[in-house]
Image (tube, rainbow, N blue to C red):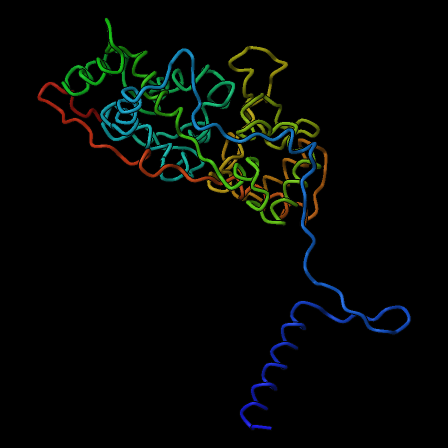
Amino acid sequence: MNKKLFMALTLASMLLASCGDSKKEEVNTPDNSKETTSTASPKVTVSDVHLGLLKALPTSMDSESNPITAEKVSLGKMLYFDKRFSKNHDISCNSCHGLDTFGVDNKQFSSGHKGQLGGRNAPTVYNAALHLAQFWDGRAADVEEQAKGPVLNPVEMAMPDEASVLKVINSIPEYVEAFKKAFPGDNAVSYDNFGKAIGAFERKLVTPSKFDKFIAGDKEALSNEEKKGLNTFMEIGCFSCHNGPAFGGNMYQKLGLVKAWPDLKDVGRSAISKNDAEKYFFKVPSLRNIEKTAPYLHDGSVKELEDIVAKMAEYQLGKTLSKEEIGSIVTFLKALTGTPDADYIKEPKLPASTASTPKPDPS
């Protein structure tokens, strides 16, 4: 036989044998004979019952009372990034709810006017318009109302009053024109419209993820491990509170439902409702982008995602999870990390101040 042909055939035989070895392995049967078995992992499936409970994010979070328009969104985006709506011109909505950091600042408590710290962790603005109310205690009905709160809060942006906000707007002709376009009719420049413009912008802060592709029918969008994590999430009972397209935000729940939460001082919703039955109740947070929005809880007291999963199981469900179960749930939760629209969240060019625009006030 030709020497080159012999070497080629020998090499081919070795490659075929190698390929076969990589796909199958030999195992001993009870009768000591040998047989081959595939090492490929079986595909993990999600039950139809679970699939029927899951929902994808909408493309926008519409409001009948504040319809989204291009003019409102454009104006709201500028207002969201503009630091002149803080007393010292050093804080904007984006300062604590950074759109390039998944709508948070990753601090336990945000820094406000003169470095003052707020008393609760800043929640994300992404997908927030889906929630039943805003803030941890639900004191604002919607994102439009919420947008007006921090501006006048003396610890946060510290503007003295609504009139001070309107004075800034009216001192900048481009803003006045933008308000007229966004809100045709009388009294276009108003504090309510200030909130509506920011609200309209926030109603399109949606972050679809691979999970949404999965729910839309792409069964390969999630890996086997992510599907396994979803099954664990559902079976353990997490979904009982973290449900809906945002995986949360649909209800208030007591922190320490089955076991008293340690060192809990904030009474939560009862401070607003004056109802003792709601003591230690907080709005259930969304799990969308949860791996990117640490630290966790209303007080930012938990830093690691694995820790908050374990604590939620223990104090809310009365269950002690294994390391494997915690890891499985975390794997699924990471599949809820979405992708913001880069163009939509890009910082806009703001209109210039004029001689009549109020100056920064550090006092």
